[in-house]
Length: 75
Image: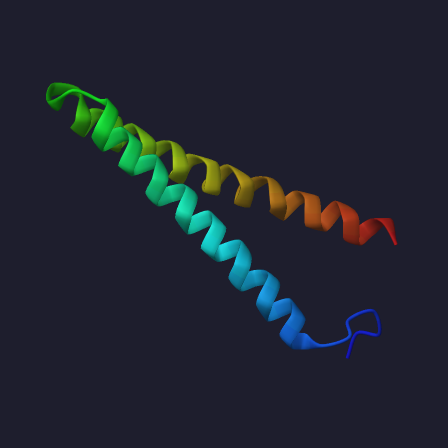
């Protein structure tokens, strides 16, 4: 496999930890929105948070495709 990785399970552990941190941040964001916004603005605030999350993921995917091709052509 890859010589710089001592074990594939180490990678699994890091990915699990990163997923738990990301999920905790996501839950904490919506918990704070639920607590700190008024009833009349809560639905809009949660929808805006969902849309911004989706737009960020979509933009990172759109940037990753040409960046991957560029990096592959360098070598």
